[in-house]
Image (cartoon, rainbow, N blue to C red; front, side, top):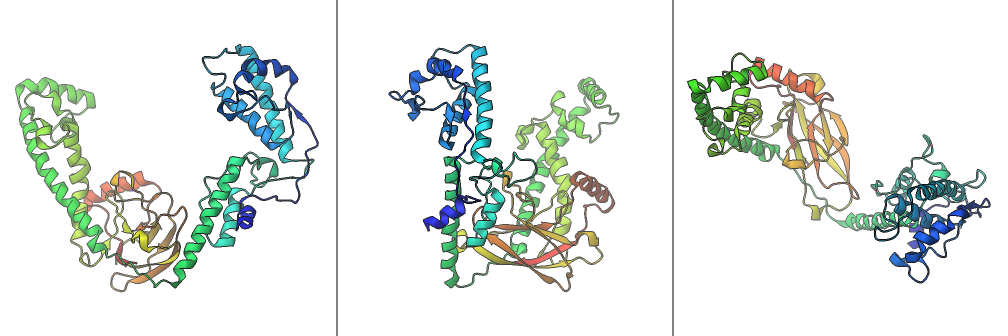
Length: 444
């Protein structure tokens, strides 16, 4: 097992490492600087922070020496060393020291990872390590924690850029252990009975939409009560000067039912306090209507009243678009590949360009019940109809770096702003917004 981890974690990609012949020397002229500002705390006797610089050679011949010199460079560049309470070097001598050390480290990195054009020792890059682990264990690892592979033009396999430290080596080993644990868990799950987990959207997203509509209705009634008080105050002679300021500020002639009037209602005398109606302020009260009820209530209500909403759901696009989440109990899901089935149909007469669904990982930011975390995993055309739905099948993976839940949504447009403008245009025509295009019966 240890040999397997070692081979998977760190590769001597081209045979036996050879000694680096070319010397890399940090100029000896800096020894006095080193002695004056570093060795007082980091000599062999003191070793503060378990760092011994007294035995550190100015002739860099090993990766270990290079790593320690790199730590010196990093600490001084960050202003951590020398400590504030200690004597500080002059700016000129510190700059000279750091410039020469930086140049030396560049040379050391190149010479220690490349010898006369022949790579002596290198690590697997992220792509190679991912593919190797997947080939050996079947596990699809998330390798973002591994060292980046840049620094050598457009190629990610140039040995001179595959410099590795002991800490980075541990990252490879840790991921290797994770892969082996998951491989054993996969093997242990082979004898388990097949688990089928089905989601009926009329019991999930439709219920969520119904509760959302109730909240919008309740907020709308509170808004109407507050709005009536604002409209009354706007008629008072004492507020005409304030109204004129609002008109000039936004270049508006008629403030009747204007968003600007209610956003700036606090400028008027005698207006009711929005907090008494359950809002944070006048702007919050206005947004509850314009950004909530007015924008989405008719859309949600229309979809809820469509045929087949009692045994499925219509995916939404634009404002108020939703997802269907498949979230089986985590303790019942072993790592591995699972078959995902979706029974779906396209709505007769709808735009064929919208007869597509996407599968991805649901995002959980701010409890918004829509959208994916990252890019979709896959996309699928819906060829069935609501009268004769088809079953779409695909494979999803659960394991290292992958959530144990998935989501389905109608394919989203690249230009979201354009689609929202079109949503508002269509809403003026039909009273609610985008017509339905895809119906989902169930997913499992």
